[in-house]
Image (cartoon, rainbow, N blue to C red; front, side, top):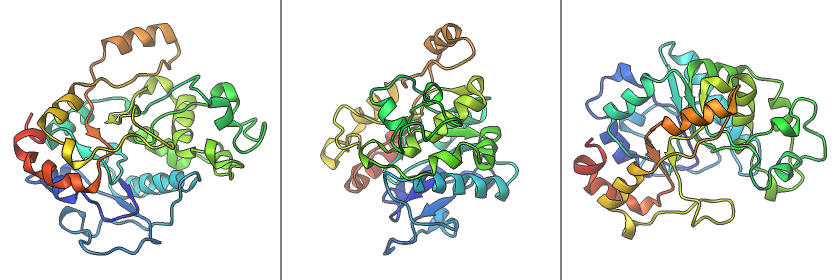
Length: 286
């Protein structure tokens, strides 16, 4: 599921990713902001006719939550065999072949969603709509933070699509955009309350916050993209939260996990050249 405001800059790489894969093993859904003036190249190939009914999205607002919920609802209704639902951005790339990615996801009985507690600035984020506005549906002790990008199993996709209780709070406008990132709060808070044991509290989309600024992670540029980068991203280990009915037991099980990153962001559009040059020999070869 791609959440985008532009034609996908890495569509050629994703075309290779899906190349020669039976169509019944995957479905593609695109939420494309209709307020953007789409120019060439249009969505084509595996992306042809995959844009769902979409609405404008805006940072620091609940529109990004609404778009992801719209994608999940469409995917749930479209195909009853859809089992795992991966949310991706236009700056995301695959780190492995489709076969490797499919095998990791389809064998999992859990969703992968970062669920972090006691993060810096958590109270300010919780109170972004006003003091105690989130209560009683979302008490501060139940508030969680995590990556916007996750992979949910069907049970949890249905939980998100059906939710009205928490959505009634998270869709309220923020008083200060500097502390308002609803898409990083709603999904981890909802699923931590609904089924913490059914989630691996980590994202499978690698991102580098060490060089981030203004709420954005580091952007990779054309001159630094190469085989060693891909290998390094593959070797990195996700950051795990410590959610579950017994935090100490869950922490122990997390230490034993070796979940690989399957995707990575944030790549500038100019990276498509070097990525395509090594797609078959490096990225899509496991």
